[in-house]
Amino acid sequence: MFTVNLSSSVPLVSQIVDGLRKLIDDGAMRSGTKLPSIRQFAHAQAVSVFTVVEAYDRLVAQGYLVSRPHSGFFVRKRAAVGASAAGAAAGGYSFDSGWYLRKIFENRHLTMKPGCGWLPSDWLFEDGVRRSLRALAADNAVDLGGYGDPKGYEALREAIRDSMAEQEIAVAPSQVLLTQGSSQALDLAARRLVRSGDAVLVDDPGYANLLFSLRFAGARLVGVPRTPQGYDLAALERLIVEHKPRVFFTQPRLQSPTGSVAQLAHLHRLLHLAEKHDLVVVENDLYADLDPEPRPSLASLDQLARVVYIGSYSKTVSPNLRVGFMVAHPDLIEDLAQLKMISGLTSSEFSERLIHGALTEGRWRKHLKSLRERLADAHGRVASQMHGLGFELFTEPKAGMFLWARHPALEDASVVSNQAAESDIMLGPGHLFAADLAASSWMRFNVAFCQDTRVFDFLRAQIDASGAGGVG
Image 1 (cartoon, rainbow, N blue to C red):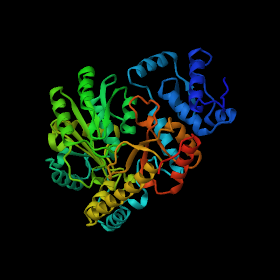
Image 2: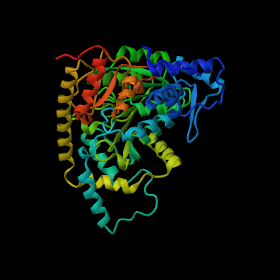
Image 3: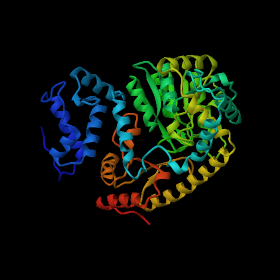
Image 4: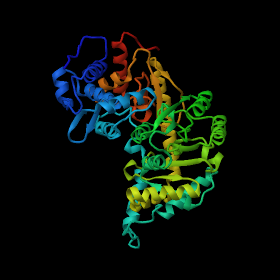
């Protein structure tokens, strides 16, 4: 084994990653060797458990380690390491997505969560859900036996049809498939449209859960650079010609992590390229209800000829109820419904009835208006504070949940995030959102969780410790 140099200028995470990689490459640690537990390694090297978590995380992503539930971390078989290294060079990774998801949700206990991807409970539509629950409990005519409709609760699908009509997307209820949140919808789309080894276009940076899911499915991720206006259109066309992908998973509106919104001209150009190169576009529009501006979507411009549209109520009503939906061409939606039945039978009609009741009891639009105003106010205050500390903001959407920011004095966001966790703060380091998982100075900030002054006190201390000071 090696010893971490606590006084070195090389980040501790990098030292651990490089040290373990050398041991594995040199054959000192053979395939199947079990590594010390996170806590054992941290104690032996006098570093924090968060530092070891990050190092093991990177080694799993790079194909050197494999995580086995309830057993620990093991050196991956040598053949797999070589294949994974080749895949890494091509922009693809073999990654244990379960490990990533566990890491995110195990950190929910941290008191301050400026890097998380959900809203505080008191920002959600709890009152509407409680009223819906009381009404559902009092309705003796409701039959909750059986599995329900394979496509989901019909009344909610009809409500979604009406909502789509307001967005100028013409669909029938039969074209609406209810899912267990947007995560299941994205998974169904990936399993229907992507085969192992396929080149798949994704936003870069992009929606972290999707990226890890696609890696797990064996896709070769091809990152399309995001810009404050939407996409790097020249790079998009070049990547389509070079890699010949079959599908592009994208989030045009209030994107995670950047908060950017693709301009109308960018949407038109994307659809033109999709038509020219026979590309299916999966539009992840789960933040649509947070947008105060009525703007077209890819689905409204395309009318579902090439676009699969995905939405969710997790971000605005309740993440616990796990209700999302997807809308697609009639032929494709039947295939997706079949996949849904194969993987998990029907979704929860009880949750779907609760959501439907909350949406139709009369206060939904008022809730959305209040939520959008609250987020706009938070954006203004958080952006001002970050400018004062000398942060560069990718864009300032003044809507949605996220700001994407970096500071010239904070070169590796993962190092800052590990130190933040020791101060009871969850940050969102940029490498989690990168198509190639490369180290990054960018961080995602959820403005709804940046109300605690201790978050900015921590950031200021990190900047001061680096020898740089904020401005203003």
